[in-house]
Length: 315
Image 1: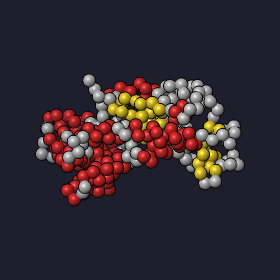
Image 2 (image 1 turned 30 degrees about the vertical axis):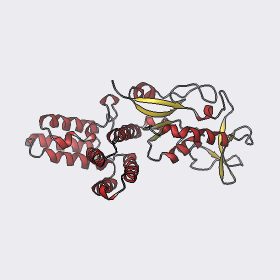
Image 3 (image 1 turned 60 degrees about the vertical axis):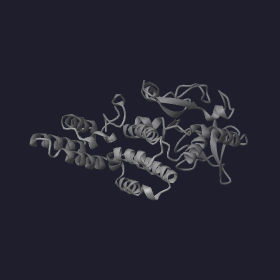
Image 4 (image 1 turned 90 degrees about the vertical axis):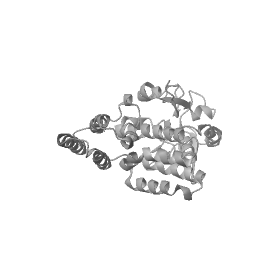
């Protein structure tokens, strides 16, 4: 039986009727697709802080240099302390989560560009982060956090889901907390890192090479953070092309002249935007089945998550 990955989610995004008007904001991709692989743990900060539903609308207000959560109708009604109190009590229960999907634009759950009002009623350009999500990201800076609305973007959707699977893999692979477990994990993610960030690929490689010089617990925390920082950077077409060409080098003694030409053509088609990444990887995996290579077969880059999610079809 497939073990599902623990992921937090704003309860309204999962379909629970907890919004201010008694409704929900169900995300079909989360409910229909991700729920097959993720064990969603729903949280509604506003309900948790005792606001109930239906309830008056709330907003974020900058007041004397502080951000307060107040009633839209009467800004003297302040929910900031109750919200922060609930959040402080709730956050420790998220220690083993591998991701969090939050509700966009929410003054409690929004990840970015949440409306922030001034006392004169005008909004501050750029907005801010919802109170609950702000504290979540502060306590768990390595945790993949994404908004429901941004899942409509195929690049952002793929990136978020992959980071969740990668963090889960990291926890599972390093459960024994040994130097070998870190080295083995890093080895499997080399091509992934190459595609996401050349700079962090080199930095993490150097760190792992010098792991004996670190206190292990300190190394574990630092590596986890830098790993997730690297994966948060979207894999660019340029970096993916370099990675694919690097993989191609492993077949130079195996493929026929015609096969080499075919793979080169597909890589160039991908680079020019005429073919999704999946098209190239399908051929590479085919060649790998014919000409096995232990190192390549271990690389997460070639199969980062269940193919049923079809996340690379448009990349």
